[in-house]
Image (tube, rainbow, N blue to C red; front, top):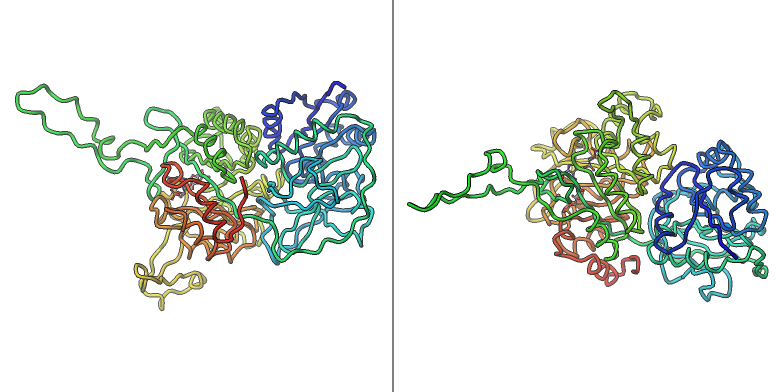
Length: 576
Ligand code: 1PR
């Protein structure tokens, strides 16, 4: 039978990654552009990214909801990803609009008493059917990338009919939830196969090759039995490779790397005096270039991204570090970088820099939501907000309302794409305190007392900065972290200006301080100099992920070595 594979896009989230994955696998496809296209489809994949409400709303406004239901009822193969699986259920506590009602249960939010929410990262699956021969291409020995705050619980005693749909489950903290559903022509997964590296590609490829006949029927699964939580879940710690991107003095976008955010070569070039009687030496460069040095160039962003994907990075971050100077929507080279990187990288990508309301030179306003949307369409999975998050929390604190007014970049993007798509990148700096006994005010409880040889007797707090550390603001890192969680951020990328590029290890005091003040995931960043630093940050803080730049760019440490060290210490990490 000829396959006419269609992808369903309701206008939100990163659907490009699925398209890239299918291209890589050699499957051709078309996009559903009108309700009539559902009639032509022999296979349909719905890569639902974002929030349940905006997904159902987007499907309804395009006239796709009913044709989608009819498509599924007709028995033709359907593969739903994340929201594309959740929409099969009756409803979600995330939304006022109902789902398709094909699976008789509802979606609910994760409890966050024993874990951070969203569930963001790589986790394992447990197949419920006795036959575990890789029939569906799903492998219990591998890890898959999840990113969601809402889930379908697996509870065969309470909901026996819904449980019959469950095909595999995953444990996060003490909660066991549905990882994949399968019945007749329907397959759905809560994780993102298009972001799960080779493991996810194999799953998609297997489905496309085997789901062939629309009349295929499986024997009914055995009655489902409860799954007791294991002492440890299968959730792994993430290793993230970060690329700070900016234009060099020749105007090319390069990956650069600073020391404490200074990305220019430190030493001015020295010019010897011309030898007596010899030919004159070339003219020295201008004083400015000589003193400041050139922008460090550590490679091309797309080539480095491909290298880190192949090396087993669990995630990549690309930060446009000079974005505060101009409108990112006009910054087509950065969008082109994201597009090209997304075609070769099949793990999540966070893109940051310049995610804020801007105005084009011709006066056209460009809301942060539009800027983020451009990056998502190019292939980003999350956007990272820096300076704008600081200003938003300042407004939040000034309003005394205790919540945002809905207009900040964090709120607008989280509403449309889900909070898991919004990372806040924090650039704190230590402020040393001479006499703690006279330091008054609420920030007193945030003061860290130094210990160890170098820091004994010192005390400090952490102040937030904007514009790449150039301007300090009257906001502490704890105030910022708590504020962005209230506004709806899904993750904190915690840099340290003091440690950036020093190779002295992560600032464990800073990481612990922020980790214990929020219940969203935290990524430790800045200062990694060797593999032991990664072991330390995971063993001594409850952080979910660790990010490094310089040591990976310079090839001093390979990602595989970091993972090996973690495994040797019994720290759970993704196999590659
Ligand atoms: O304010 O929303 O436009 O975002 C600007 C973004 O650019 C922020 O995420 C900010 O952290 C980043 N940024 C701005 N200037 C610099 C700079 O270096 N001059 N880079 C900069 C931040 C920090 C990390 C770095 C880690 C690990 N770089 O990204 O990769 O410190 O480095 P290491 O492992 O080598 O120690 P907006």
